Amino acid sequence: MPSRRKTSDSGRSGWLRTTSHTAGSRPRRWRSRATQHVKVGIGIVASVARHPAVTAMEIATLARVYPGRLLPGVGHGVPFWTDQMGLTPKSPLSALTECINGVRDLLEGMTVDLEGRQFDFHSVALGHPPTTEVPLLTGVLGPKSLALSGKIADGTVMSVLSGTKYLEAAVQHISGGWRKAIGTRT
Image 1 (cartoon, rainbow, N blue to C red):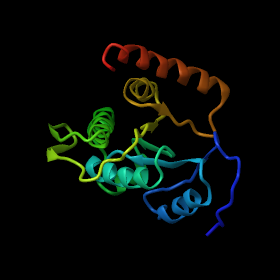
Image 2: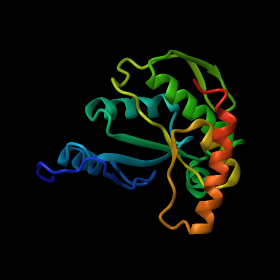
Image 3: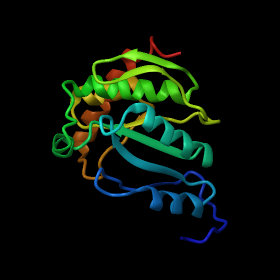
């Protein structure tokens, strides 16, 4: 484990890759313990790989241990992997929306009751919600998903492989979704 050291690391962030086929919690713990201020992105979890209540519990635990530093992300998942597991949703946009909204409501301390297209919640609440607000990011690619991200997420994670033209187009889609959401957010 890296040693704890005093650094001027405020404003920086680090991202650790996780997949459905690798264990990612140990490197996250090491990175989070090694610094005092660096925000840590835990990568993008597939909205359908686990129920949003379980995702919310995991995020809440990390957010309570490292308040104000966690940058969790949710996406559609790698289609090949979700198909291998029999988890391909009929509507990826609905699954992502239900996941983000359910996770956000649970992190805010609400009790969730929902019969959705992908997920059902029957009086679900977290026993220990986080003590600080947790931003929810998405990691998505296509125009409809990027617009949805602008509407429901607090940010969008882009691939390091994204080119300038793609990023310019992505910003337009995200901004369009955000503009549509302005009237619905308080």
